[in-house]
Image (cartoon, rainbow, N blue to C red; front, side, top):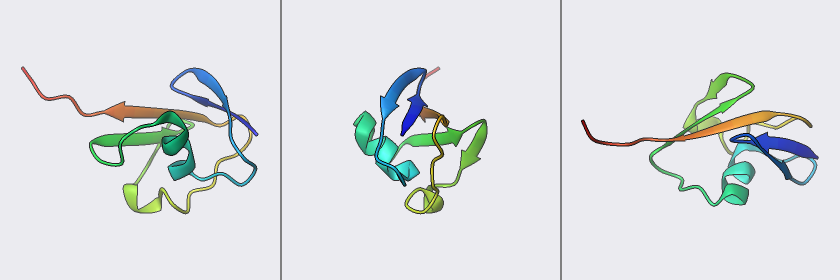
Length: 66
């Protein structure tokens, strides 16, 4: 299936979950927040939250500073 991760089109296996998108992106499992189609996905749901073909996933990294 085709999804968009941070504005870039990517191919994931059918039935992919949010955690699979993070692995494909090479994103860390800590210090990030994930939204799918504009809705924040709680970390506890990453392994079970299914992605649909065409989903738009935003992975945001926490940045410290002032």
